[in-house]
Image (cartoon, rainbow, N blue to C red; front, side):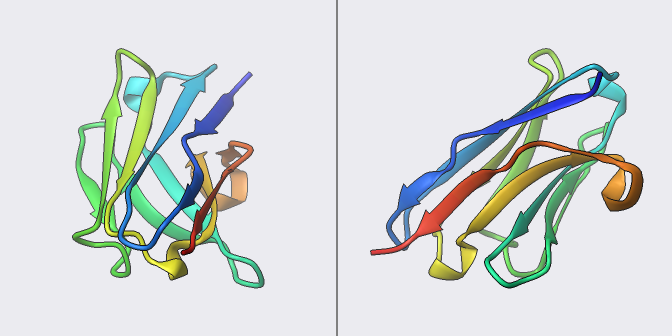
Length: 115
């Protein structure tokens, strides 16, 4: 069965960095686009970044220039490198394949940006 396991979240001060990881199993990782979403308290889940199977990356305007999505097909993992973090980046970050309606989700990892 499909499994997505996120890790790497935590508490960081404004301006700090974190690297999130998402390890996938149960599907053809190298043939699958990977997407990071986040959900802040009281807000809707939103797309953060997507990387295609060929490595093309796209980002939400709010994170462009600060976040970098990448993938390692040999490790069956996708990553989200987050720099210059802001308090408004505080959220649970989720890994997704297949979209929001019929796709699969990981359990999420909490990122808290606070001094």
